[in-house]
Length: 109
Image 1: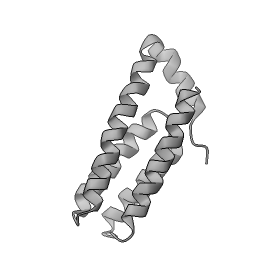
Image 2 (image 1 turned 90 degrees about the horizontal axis):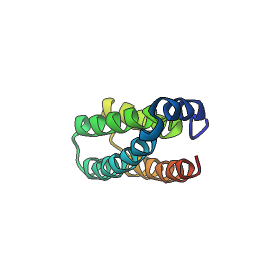
Image 3 (image 1 turned 90 degrees about the vertical axis):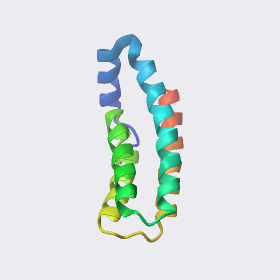
């Protein structure tokens, strides 16, 4: 799976024009907070809090075309929904690594 959906990004850039940079910066800031929140909630046992955090990050990632990041968040959301709370630190670490890659790719877009 591609890390970014460049068609989505090009469309956003055309539609948003000068505000595209603000959209990407907002995504970065929000994602940093969402990632921190994920690390916090996976330390606990509140599956619904984990699911909500993963769902939120999934949506924002999808909105900017970060397909793989969105898929990783969807997988974490599904695990939390099923009550499978084993190994979630590794899932969040994978999300963080993908997010760092997405940041780099967005920098070069």
